[in-house]
Image (cartoon, rainbow, N blue to C red; front, side, top):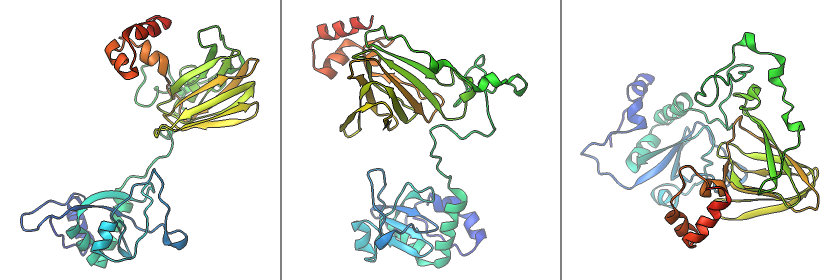
Length: 325
């Protein structure tokens, strides 16, 4: 571990990369690494504790302008008894892996603590909480004749943009539900509504025949929310902890499905049903479990599916035949 003597901005500039990734040397014995977060202020709630959720990252110690605060039991054994929890998703925090000797060096000098805080403010990127990147212009109507580029289509030249680019009537038309699932989706995404390009939003109209099913699927690029317009739908999703959440909804009731989770909608009423959904992406994508597994091109090998579902090959072949595979 290289011990740095930093007492001025010039020292900080000269050693900035060494601070972020300290280089090892032979004369210092390396101990067990600790996870350290830098912050230029503390997020303290009532009682001096920030609750930890499943989405938070526990760290060993927090280095702030006020000094080093140990957090984990391991760090507490090495330092003070004063501890807090750190909410690691804050955009003002960043995680590093540094040995204890460097933590002590960082906490030893007030000037080092202050300069360490400046690193966070000046060098670390802020998080963006939207599914799609924020646009840098009022609009970017998609030029669908061009090839899609990173995170969207190129913009149509401004002189070619018309009012019609900002309106779409596709969701006013009932979909055809005469298929094996008794279901139809009409998508209002960037491919059908080019005015949505780069704006991070889209919608679907979903029609159900009696008993119709929107089969288990997921949206890899967006969270989904929806409102039942008519009928009665059983709506459910499964978390990554394999917990199933569901509820029967009727007209006017809403739901939300977190991004990427497998979910479905089933018409449990005696009449047809209608649902409108919205996404925080102009092109959320959809991976439909039955067709993904049993109708891919080229097909998934039968031996994979027989092992995954613990059934015979005849069963797999029968299922694939239902999807024309």
